[in-house]
Length: 259
Image 1 (cartoon, rainbow, N blue to C red):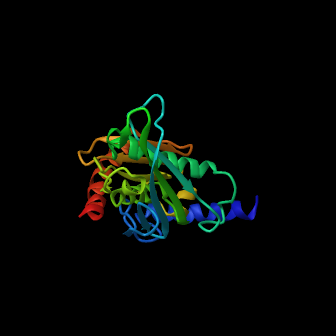
Image 2: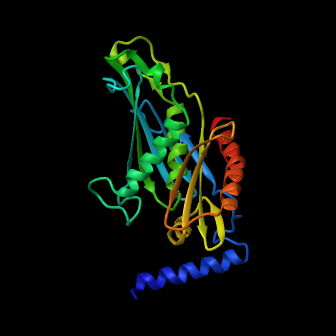
């Protein structure tokens, strides 16, 4: 047994002992988020941007827009492209080089929340059918990783998109106009540690979790996207409670973003 395995076992036992007493390491309730801090227009060279902290997890999201050719199967729709960068500056567990499985998953989950949540009207981003549309690049950069990247990145992407402007003048396409958001889905991530379900896991809770579930709800309470992770499972009662809790938390987070 390696020293790392021994430490992981000790850490898991300590956290489980606390959970059995109804406590978390940072004294939060099981359904309580860490503090969320946010700042828009963080990058001066981007069409829209935001910096978001969820506890000690910190991400910066930039939005760039440019004309491009549409996909052949959607000649009258704009294009959404989402990318996530997770380097060693954010965590010693991240490496330089090609995108890791973790960064690919973060990008896909964020993209799905935006796309399936109808955040953007891609049809309105058509400039000339079959020839030219707006391409929306959502670039995520993780600055500090202390658990729950999915929620931080989705919040950052929403804020960055909400602050973005179509740079029409630069490309001789008329006047600049704000990028309009049709919908504002919010993603909440939960983990199961032993028999306990926790929202917004920090890194220690995330590392010992048996199962993970991210739920994206729109303002009407409709489920727009789900992402299941890790090898464990959730009971039907767990899932019902998670969705109900997400509804309450998502409304609170949304008010904080767009008040």
